[in-house]
View 1 (cartoon, one colour):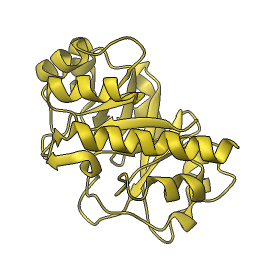
View 2 (cartoon, helix red, strand yellow):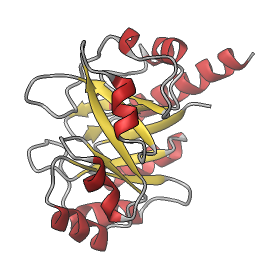
View 3 (tube, helix red, strand yellow):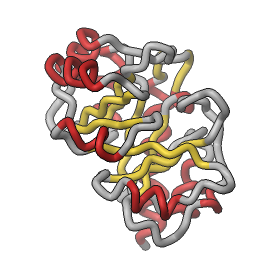
Length: 210
C-alpha cells in the first residue's frame, strides 16, 4: 500500500486532521525561508498532539549541523529529510533515518543519486524549480524515474487529489508526499482536501491490488 506524507504542517488542528485522515506521516519544515516554516518549539507542540504510529519527519535545507542537533533536542523527530546539497556523510551523522530529496530534471542521474545516498531510507523526488528547494507545487516528468531504482521512491511535486491516482499508477512509488495540493493557504491545510487526497490514494491502491 502506498504510504502518505502530508508536509508543511504549521497548526495543531491540521496535524490532528492529517492523523485522523489516515495519513502515515507529517512533515515539519525547519527552513526559515519557507512560508511553512516551524520553530523548534512550535514543532514540538505539533508533534505532541499526534497519536501513536504517525511518523514525524523534519525537513532541513543545508542547515548547520548544530542547528539540526538543537532541533532534535527539542522535537522528537522520527526521520530527517534533507532538501539541499547535503553530502551522504552529513545526512548520516545524526543517528536518525533520513530521506534525501532530489530535484528532478532532464540530465539528473537518479541511479547515481541512489548509489551516492545508499544510506538513505528513500529518495524523495521533487520538481526542479531554479532557486527553490521544494514546496513549489510544480510537477515533473515522471518518465524520468528509472523503474529499477535500488531505493524506495517517495513521489512529491505538485500532487493533489486530481492527479495522485495517475502518479501512483505510473510510478508505483513507496509513498507520496503532498503539501500545497491540500492547502487553502501556504502552511494552512484544508481537512477536506487532505481527506480527499488520502481517500484517492487508498482507492487506487485497492484498484491496483485486484
